[in-house]
Image 1 (cartoon, rainbow, N blue to C red):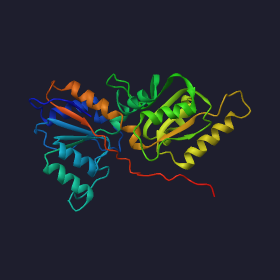
Image 2 (cartoon, helix red, strand yellow):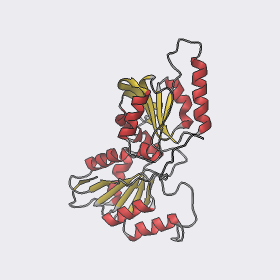
Image 3 (tube, helix red, strand yellow):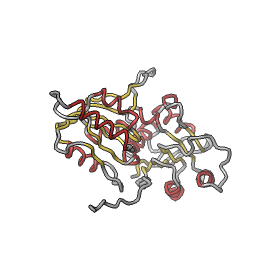
Image 4 (cartoon, rainbow, N blue to C red):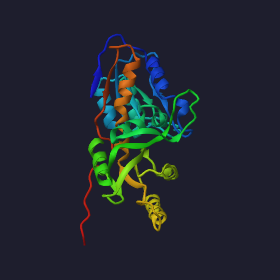
Amino acid sequence: MTTGTTDSAPALRDVVAVLEDLYPPATAEGWDAVGLALGDPAAPVRKVLLAVDPVAEVVDEAIAWGADLLVTHHPLFLRPVHSVAATTFKGDVVHRLLTAGCGLYVAHTNADSAPRGVADALADLVGIGERRPLVARDDADGVERGIGRVGRLAEPTTLGAFAERVAAVLPATAQGVRVAGDLDAPVTTAAVVGGSGDSLFDAVRAAAVDVYVTADLRHHPASELRERAVFEASGTDAPSATPYLVDVAHFASEWPWLRYASEDLLGRLPEGTVTTRVSTIGTDPWTARVASTAR
């Protein structure tokens, strides 16, 4: 997916300024590594490729297309390193990008919480309206930010039908969509968190939603959430043991944001100066799923 045309090009520092206005680095988590990772601030930028992961296949695409800047959601380096020699797989990425004259910019947890960021893109796709952040942050700049989104679905549905919608609107992955709960149960409210979200189960319970969509759900946290829900719903007038869980692939939950980032970047740069492309390469690490058979 490519948008925009080229004319006189802005400098990399100008593109970075736009990205940092959209996704202020100060709003990233303290452990995160965001911002400009590679590139000469004075270099011209005519083509920007956006992707979830700065992996070798995406770098191949960026170089083959002639990108001047690769914008990714996930950092290339989350921990300090003492070498970027091309003898390592990440060092090789660094050398190939620099040799091709392509910079690398990362917007991670600052993009998770931003307006029209990862959370909003996922909430829009699965149909959540009247929404607010699941975990709100300080809005010192006057902009409402926060991890995840919670709100009402456009219309009541069942857990099974909702899960089918999620599967239909997200990129296809080997994992597909996993569900915990009665597929016929009614659902009217939902919460979403792009990426790994089982650390936010307490916030999801406090929000009292019917279903929670996130990725990377582990056995024990998911099992305990559902066991607690069933236990606390028993012997009461509660209609069901909520929240139910819809678990998707990490990559799939964050990819939808790339289109918003592309549109918002172009909208703030001089018209006709930069071309953007959203990578459609699937960077989910899982490549196949083998169905279990009864024994």
